[in-house]
Image 1 (cartoon, protein in one colour):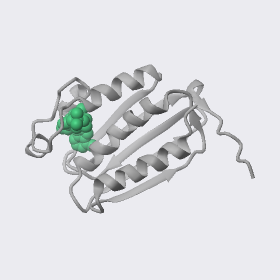
Image 2 (tube, rainbow, N blue to C red):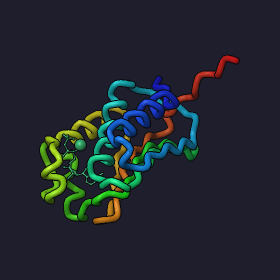
Image 3 (spheres, rainbow, N blue to C red):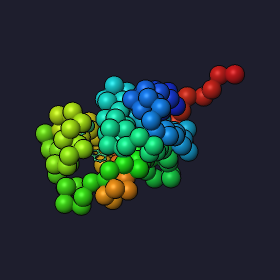
Amino acid sequence: RVDMDELLRVLLVEAQGLSQGRHEVVLEQQSDRWLWGSVNELHSAFGNLVSNAIRYTPAGGAVTLRWQFDGNRAVFSVTDSGIGIAREHLPRLTERFYRVDRGRSRNSGGTGLGLAIVKHVLARHHARLEVSSELEKGSTFSVSFPRERVAEPDAVTP
Ligand code: ATP
Ligand code: MG
């Protein structure tokens, strides 16, 4: 089982480290549920979404990490107020080496493998990736897990 309290705390610290104070980084933890799966794989997948959000959001913007469970699906999402992605690019984002051909992303030194790895890891965890985005406004990448993948947290020992 993956301790989501701990993983979210680690992701928050990593986001703050990447941002270097240039963004408002927020964690909204609305669920105490854990996940069945590999902590290393989920750390790498969620971490990719977080590093993209920081990388593609100019200074002064906001990046929010969210963890929710509605009784059916559990959702980890990252919302940024960054450069956004044009609709025509959305279907191809998770292809290997695919990068949106705009000045800013071309010059920001990635390989275009991040989301391909995310897709692979999420398939192994029966999770679904959804992206909504508006140019110049920002993006939300949501990862949702079916109920069978959601675990109870360990009881807190007093
Ligand atoms: P890598 O992750 O391998 O370092 P990368 O970030 O370019 O490189 P991906 O993470 O696969 O590669 O992302 C693919 C492309 O999708 C990016 O090049 C960028 O154009 C676009 N993209 C991804 N996340 C965002 C985001 N949060 N905002 C705007 N564009 C994004
Ligand atoms: Mg990336």
